[in-house]
Structures are given as C-alpha cells and as structure tokens.
Length: 276
Picture 1: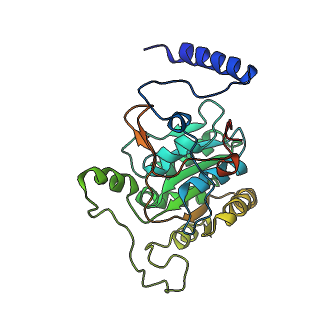
Picture 2: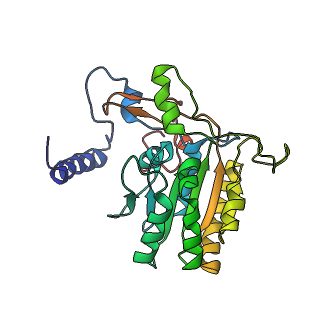
C-alpha cells in the first residue's frame, strides 16, 4: 500500500532509468507469468468487418489531441477505453458516476460543454447506454452544446454478456432485431435501433461507420460538423456482435481474449513500443 502520488513518482523514476539505459522492459511481477503477458501489449490494429472495438480506440487516439475531455459511464466500451485511450490532463477522463448509472454519458457530456465551452468534448457509449437517455441530445441542439458522441454499437449488453460467461449463460442481453424500417441490404440490418435517424430527429448530426478505414475520416468530419452546426454529432461505429475485453482480478492475472501485438504495426498508437 502507498500514497498513489508517491508510488507513481517512484515508478516513473524507475521507468526513466530503464529508458535511459536502453533496457525499458517489463517490471517483473513474479508468479511465473509469461514474458509476453507481463508486457500486456494489446493489439489494436484489426481490419475486420464488422469492426473490432480495439481499432476504434486506435483511431480515436489519432483523431483527438492532448486536451480532449473524454466522458463515459459504464460497459465494455468504458472498460476498453480506459485501457486504450490516451488521456494526458487532470479531469480529462470523466467517468460519469462509476458503474451503474446507465445513460448518464449524454447529460454529463452536455454538462462538460456548458462548463468549458472551449473544450473538445468526446463522449463514448455502447448502444444501450446511449438509448437510456438519448433524448437529452435535444438539449444539446437546443442550447448549442457541441460535442462528439462515439457510439460503439454491437447490439448487446456487452458487459453483462461477458460477465455471464462464467455461468455459461447468454440470456436476454441481446438487443439485435430485424428492424422493419431497414432492408436486408442496409448497413445496420439485424442490429435493431437506427441511432442515426434518432440523432437526426433530435436535431443533431450523425454519421455511421462500418469499415475500419473510415473511422478516422468520420471523426475528422465530426470535428468540422460541431464547429459548423454547434450541436452534438453522433458517430456510430458498427462493431462485431461479440467481443470480450481484457480483464482480471490482479495486474498479473489479466485474461486476454485476443492475440497480443507482435510488432508496432499491430498497436501503432501504443504510448511506448518495445515490439520493434
């Protein structure tokens, strides 16, 4: 146990010593943990369609700068973002209420916009968190509170689904259905709710992304739209239906579900690369 500030000061000092000595490797945690496991270099560069969520955070790291204020609440999206997004400043990772308050992301992001009108505000939610209080987007349109809302849509209650794995369950946490207002040829066929239409009906702008190569262009477009229209801009990214995010009870007991990065090209926005 230690004061967090004192511990981080010591850890950073050791990290700098190793960097300067050219031996910046993993800190030994003991317990026979495999070497690659200790480094925890998670792969983010996937070209899969539907999109893997790790690629979303890689592209967000490219699109947004050091002063970006991120707002999130709950779910696999919040857990994954905490692992992958680059956050540099105090109060720039705003976890709105910790685990539990579904839907708070939208009003919390609007509150950040009102409190700091010059800030770049980016909200992140899954589909159900968004649906819980999506009507608050109209408040953003009414009072000209512009922010970018990244919606990662897998049509699932993903965190509950992943938690149910331990009980060999997958019960009533699916949100997908065949929307009678979309055709089988449309990009969200089988994913249920049309979030783009909802956002537009509430007075906002909205984009949808299905191809990982289009994530960054969509985010760049969203940055222009919030300046032009001064309203929230939704960027919906259609994900693969089932993704498990790395978790564990201890730092040296994290369960990985994807192959780890083998080179820098597998994780191009990693803060420190020891892979090449």
